[in-house]
Length: 170
Image 1 (cartoon, one colour):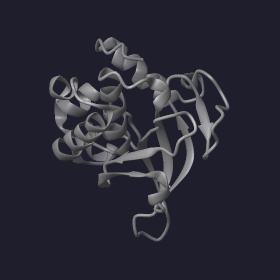
Image 2: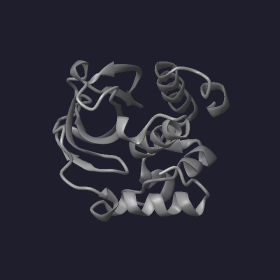
Image 3: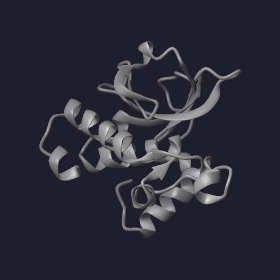
């Protein structure tokens, strides 16, 4: 997938990455896969077992887009509350792509095959977002903290495991 997408434009890269993971990875809870309530898998782990939860889909998409040359400052992992028809909103993670620092982001999500602007995803309420450069609260355009790995232990852990696997993208 990375070889095929490497020579395409940004929109095509977003579509190819979103489609690839949504079609080739089955959703399973961390409890089912890892025997833990919350575990963030590396992209290699996710592809190795072709299963993952929303964080695993999002991390794999984020890292793939970085590998394809999308700048980190245009991408964020976004922790949201998702209204999926249950009695209360569920914790969920998606990838946001910003064409410019102040533009409305486009959302890549394992719950939807379509990449849509955030304004068309009323089912998602952003809580916080991050990338390797910063941490944002809600919809803020200014980062509240640099080096998010110091505040997010699961992010730090997955970064360390990716580096051990030879994925030094970040």
